[in-house]
Amino acid sequence: PSYTIANPATATPNTFSLTPASSATPASFTVTAAYGDSTCSQTGAVCTTNFTATTHVQYLMVENDTNIRIYAPPYTGTPITLSGYAGTAGLAGVGAFDTAGNLFVSDNAGHDVSEYAPPYTGSPTSIGAGAVSDPIGVVVAANGTVFVASFTSNAVYAYSPPYSGGTHATISNGVNGPDMLALDANGNLFVSNFRGANVTEYAPPYTGAPIATLGGVSNPLQVAVDAAGDVFVLPVSGS
Image (cartoon, rainbow, N blue to C red):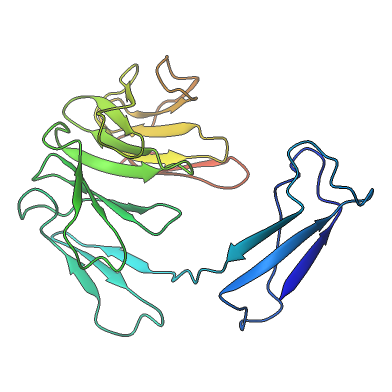
């Protein structure tokens, strides 16, 4: 079947927003951009293009002390359990998904990040093998860049796809005992510094000094940013 999107935005003529009419959307379909002048005259415009519909399964990830368990909908069956990672069997790390559903786990025993592709039953790929001392928090940007906190190195390492060329950036200015990480909608990186008793914010390309520091947080652990840009910090103790 074909779908028609009338008058796409001039600034982004190749960006279409399509909502399937029902759950029975076919595996492939054609989208036609119907411009007001009917000539597809906008620079870089795509008048007709084919898409393949992909079903995204929303997995539930549960982090435990010794493993990570992944549940598929309806979340009542036996989970997939990850406990070995790319290095050696050891402490379970913190996991994060990218937009393609790949799972990235900080591997404390292997001193790296292990990447698992769906359905997470195969062997992982190592990112930063042996180079990340005491990795804890890991987060993935929309462009696929993987950030991992190295607690004892007082640094956050960034790896860009395809992850085989070493670090893309090292964030160390103002970093002191980093544990958890978060990204906002603008790609700014937030680092909770356990030993520094603060949260530092970095703007792309992440190589300079922090653009903001939230201090007075005793032993901050978890950090999160909502859609409005509000920052939430969970301290181990204090306030």
